[in-house]
Amino acid sequence: MKKLNTKFWLGIIVALAFYGLVQVLLTIGIFNDVTRSMLLLVGVNVMLAVSLNLINGITGQFSIGHAGFMSVGAYTSAILTLDYDVPFVLAIIAGGIVAAVFGVLIGMPTLRLNGDYLAIATLGFGEIIRIVLLNTEYVGGASGLSGIPAKTTWTIIFFFTLFTVILINNFIRSTHGRACLAIRENEIAAEAMGINTTLYKVIAFTIGALFAGMAGGLSAHTFYVITPGSFNFLKSFEILVMVVLGGLGSTAGSIVGAVFVTLLYTYLREFPEWRMIIYSIVLILMMIFRPSGLLGKTKINFGKLGKKEAKGNGSIDSSTP
Amino acid sequence: MAASTAVLLDVKGASRSFGGLKALSEVSLHINKGELIGLIGPNGAGKTTLFNLLTGVYPPSTGKILLNNESVGGMKPFKINHKGAARTFQNIRLFTAMTVLENVKIAFHQHARHSLFSSMLRLPKHFKGEEEITQKAMDILKIFSLADQAQETAGNLSYGNQRRLEIARALAAGPKLLLLDEPAAGMNPNETRDLMNLIAWIREEFDLTILLIEHDMSLVMGVCNRIYVLDRGVLIADGTPVEIRNNPKVIEAYLGQEA
Image 1 (tube, rainbow over the protein chains, first blue to last red):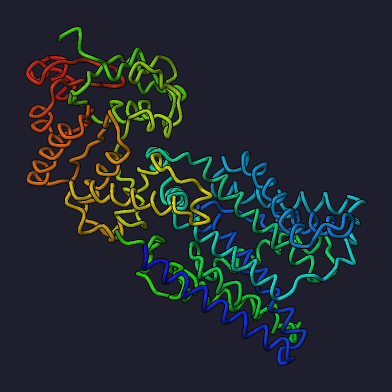
Image 2: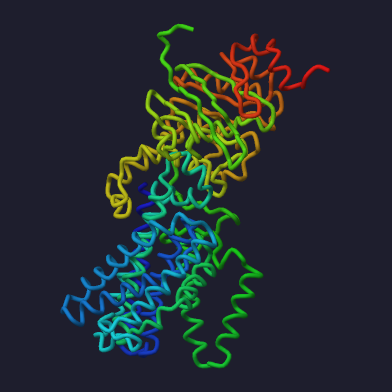
């Protein structure tokens, strides 16, 4: 346990050093506004990918409605800061909590479904949220909400992302996370060994929704405007692509996948006509040459990110007896 | 049989149909505390179906299942596991991508005292709880001589060891009743003998009651106190190994009617 703690704090120090470096570069102006907004987007996407990985990669429940939870968080927190003058950080957390409530409500009926059926149900949920927002006058209908204070800073996004990764990783590497993994591995055996599989599926779904909601709130406060269109199923797929590219079931992989896809998107923006083609080719090549993702099933180990494991090894617990 | 013996499992007229197919009809049996009972029958007799009813994979269509005088028919599998019945599977169902140690740890989850929040926030309770689980899981692995392979991925174990790990995992849940579905399937005679000795030993050590499905007759006849025989969903005989061996109905079920 002592060893684990040392590694953990080492990782924190590395992360904080990275934070400080970027902060300095931003302050003295080496990083321009484009880079700055890309960094914020990276943070949001890391939160989204890591939280979706908990549902899809760890618990094995194929959900493609993550943008739905994101939009719930985005709209909730935007309304709170715009109309009720709620302090920014509280509004973000509230957005996450409302999204988590949706997670419970959606999860309880849909998580009885398996595989393709669950995917379709969650896709449907995401679209329902979008259509409801589109037709609600109070949140601006199709034109969405605008004039949202751009309060998301590098500091805010960094610490939210850091806490997301730490909390979700702590969850995964505990008996509760193992219960989720067992569901992915063999649901019948997990149930027979005393795991309340329905409960743990809903828990994973809820925690995933909580952090997706917060990510949504943070992105709303980055770009001044939110519209229902920015949370369509393409956004859900984009998050899924990050998780799959990084390696389903690997937190470190999700982070790498999120960074990779965000950078790809940002730099391809200069070649609009080629963008989707290059993006698609990258995906196809990835699936041919590294079907298990960039990092495969690598487990996250603070301070030792990217430590390779044998292929097909989805173990996440490194505590030695 | 002494009337005072405590009954652990009591099945009263349990039936199960799948559409028009009656997989089990009116099966009644009882198992006393501490017994080792064999369940035999030709292929398709309904042995695994009976296991599935006993462990809640599906509820009985009619009839009652009492575990420790409590009705468990129709309960969810994880609840029945908490009530003290653990099983292994005919076709091994391990968590193949997880380590051997983690496989056993899963069964201890129900006894974990640290909450989700203490784990997410890494409170002292989390470390204490996890250490306790690891310790207990290692103890079980030692009994099954799997401790050396604790960090090995379960899917990489040899076939015999995978079967043993499944039993270890079932035992970790802390059951009173252990249901073993063909534990010796695919093992050679030596492995089978070792396994049987191990089963006899854990039965003593953990004060277990065991219900065993097995095809190896010499094995069943050798270790079981009593044997139930199923044929086409109906219980056709029960008794001591000697009685079963000489029961004409059993011989008929296995070898067909004399011409």
